[in-house]
Image (cartoon, rainbow, N blue to C red; front, side):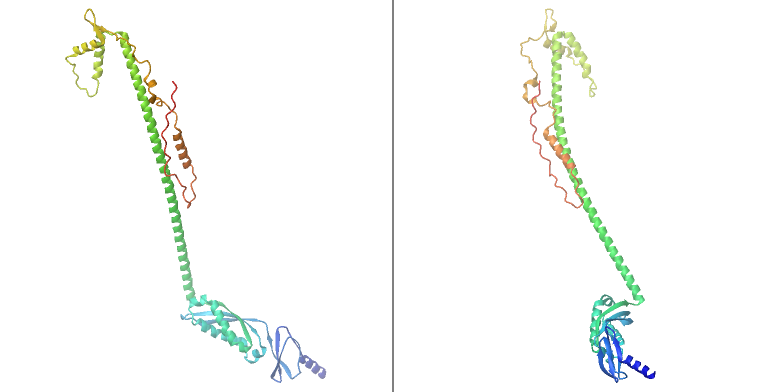
Length: 387
């Protein structure tokens, strides 16, 4: 049984299996013999032994926070993560006792050297620069250990609590400053927009007032023209009426054959009407009133056989006009025409079209408006009025 157990133990120690991505450092009688790759390996019992199995995969090691003093004498705690891979198992075993501790120490010293030349602000904003310098220093120092450093990352940078509080206040002040700036910009933009709107409104109001003034002036002009034409026609008609009235009165007087006594009586009735004026305070009857009546009767009558003046009709020589004055004057034909001028209607239509134009959006250019209304040509004389 002892022999069987001894043979079994010998076989177990003589046959070894190396897993994938692992290398085994073999020693013979205490000296380095070879580095065995993954697979089945045969050893000489009690002569050869496996010194250490080395993992050939890329390894990730996170180191605890390290206190580092910056250039402005502030202590910060920095966490680092190192990605490395063993490329030479023999060097990793015989060149250093513990390569993990060596990598940690080199990382700490290099980190203190790099961060010691930076301020806190530069440290917080220069992580890529710190990572690059750490990787270069580590890769150069660990090359003789058979280790290749792939990446170095700074996981966290923790400043002191007082500095963190100051930084928080600073960040809060910066945010409030940016908020105030944005608010001021918004108010400025709003004021500019309001000013542009007021400007556009004033321009449109001025244009509307201008158009209204032009239309009012044109309407007043046309109104005065039409009113003058109406007054002219009314005065002419009034004059015609007065002429006809005088003609009828004179004809009636001739037809009635008044006596001087009747004319004197009518003259006496007219005298109180002459004295009814507001400026007449005292009115005197002239002393030659009888002679005035005598002269008036001599104009209208002739003395009879008894010496009394009686009405004598004027001889009719046929020279009295038989037609109206307006029938003979061609310049009076258009006085009584009440039709609207087409030029005035065109101006009113143009003004209404401009008033109905759509208001442009805010910020757009105002539409071009005519500088002045088109001049009205003189109205042609209307067609002759039918008799």
